[in-house]
Picture (spheres, one colour):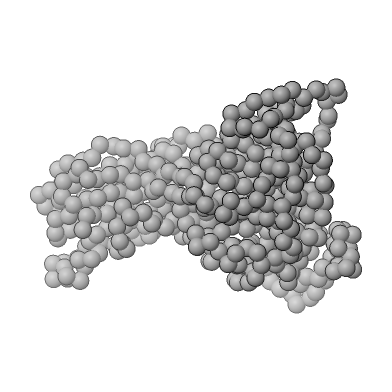
Length: 514
């Protein structure tokens, strides 16, 4: 497993920039004084050198990887020339995010096509899709209903936990509809948000009280935008037209705002593959940035690039929708691509989210050599910076997913087209316990330990952002531990998750007061 960049820690409690506290002779004390503000165990060498004892764990790829349901690591005593007052121990895990559990379908039962998710804020969750009338119940009579959190008239529907608001009684326009939930269980249908022309919705963002609904036109081509200030009225918002004339074929983009407010668009780029034979996906994902999401998207380096060797030979494939939907701009259904060898993995239908500055992409994944779309999965990629390349960190699911992701009710929801959806408490995997000991008299032995304490990462909404999630690191408060000349760390991990995912430790950071 390739080493993945660690999560950034930005909370003020951790103090200023940290350096590794080297063991140094007194003659170099002045040169190393600033490095004594934190003791970090992170690299392969640091894990191996600092461990006094370990059980049920191995150090590989610069991480502590449990090999048994329970594991323990005890560090050596770390000595310092001057007396230091400990502040906190922060435990970081690998960001691979394996901690997903399959659950029964979360989306409304009659939602069709690829789901698009949008969180406006706590208790205000939205999903968009085509309105399907599967297996209509004969002679069903709607009844008036009330639902906590909704102050508009509601009617029951033939589907459990689904209700129609006034907008939901309006006639479909052939495009996506909107459903709203306060708890990710009950769904209120508010009716159309797009017409037939704009039916290929791919992603959504929320900006200053307005929903930004991006769609491809024609299918798998240039991203367009609808801005809707009222998702409850059953009327599509203002169509802003094309916002990015993508020089490649593909799209099926994800859009995410960074914390500076810039819009990042991650799109399929079909230039290196016959997408028609690979579930309309590609090994290449382009990245474009806009200040406001309304246009002026500028291409930068690709976010994902798993192309194999180019042959210099060009070929063509055909798309069934382009000429039918937009004959003026696409008089023929032809896409040209460069042949690459050997056969490539293909990814697409991108979705994005960020947690504490760590970015994640989720996508369709058709492995090279897949026999059919039944062999497809959901791929995960991650990067510590939206402007840097993303690293593949795993896959799960079975079937053609077209996934999207949101944070709601304190959990993460990954909704897709297969027979199961997925939830996660977050990248943090339970259970991790830690304690720290201090040598107060400089004899190299521990005089006092903190109690064992379970530590967790915590996640929360960031006001004004739909896809940026705040993270509180997993930290052990050491303010009651006396100052000392040496410190020792012990960490225990226990596999308690339903999906048997083990806590992989990426970094230990013991910080001190100034």
